[in-house]
Image 1 (cartoon, rainbow, N blue to C red):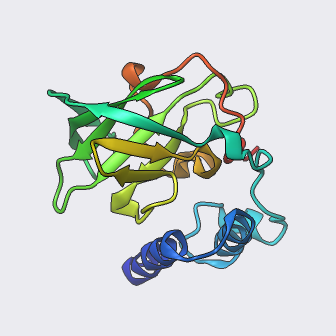
Image 2: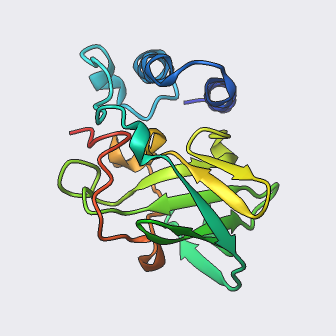
Length: 194
């Protein structure tokens, strides 16, 4: 996997997230990207037989707006890989119907908003380590999480997705910290790969 392939992957992901595709079109385009791109997290040996990601059925009722409250402090995670220790600063807490969720700002070059979460489907239908609603460093803008006026966010769990480590052990992924674990099942978004 070359650096330019990875750059192309990130650009394509960002374009997909910023496109005007509906949810069905978005999912089909994501499947195609995962099936064909050299930087896909799906192992190369699995791509020929790859028929698409597994999704929960679309659920418009899962979409919520949540007020934000200020948050402070940081979390440092040793990735165990070439990224070393990464610092995440609490940017805000979204008061969702599922429970409070911390929005993290990645304190690395350029930064980015990150919302990992682990719900009651994790390990029982969806990836056990949790899923992401947004990671803007990776180009996932405006679908799972949209910042609204008046210190509010719109959260759409239909866009929850698995981290790269859910597909292949060669990836190291930050998982949802305890404060981003909720006891309710969010049967929306991407299901477990295996």
